[in-house]
Length: 226
Image 1 (cartoon, rainbow, N blue to C red):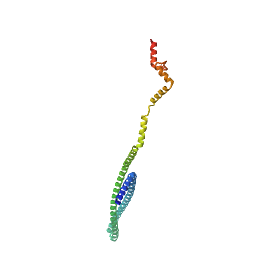
Image 2: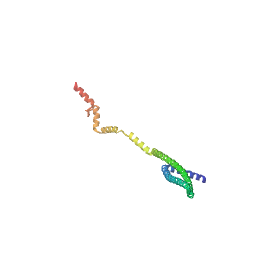
Image 3: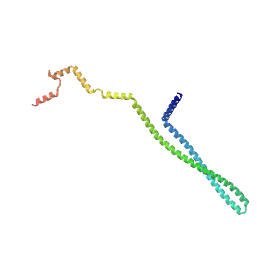
Image 4: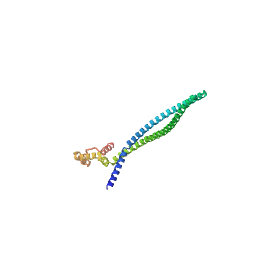
């Protein structure tokens, strides 16, 4: 039983975590992009420092080459002049410089490899961040569409609001005709008044008519034209 409860608890926790992640997905993406940009900035600084050191080592190596060449020339001149003692001192200095040159060359080779690797990493990270930014645009659009659809679904799912709107429409469409109602009211009023009684009697031939009709006018016109 305890294992079942533990499994259910873990499942509920996982679902809650997934729902929270989905809800905060855009914020999480933005945070990851900022972290990636921070790492890229550090990598660029490292690359810049390596390139500066590489240039300094190159300049130092160039100076060593110049010094060695100059001392070799002077040593040959000393030997030519029979000053082997001076030539021996120069040879010792040249040997020291050549050893330093070998170390500088190894250092420069290592720096070149590090610069190449770091530069490749920077370029790769930069491309990935560009892709992330483009993906962020798509994610924002999808999130906005999802929220709009969710809001629409909530509105459609609100049956009470829909029912009220339908009732109002039916009330307007199926309401009484104001013109017909006015005519009925006139008829009722006429039936309740004495004028209405006299009109009905006149129309029936009992006494004079109270209103002039089109037929009366036409008959009068015919009689006067003969």
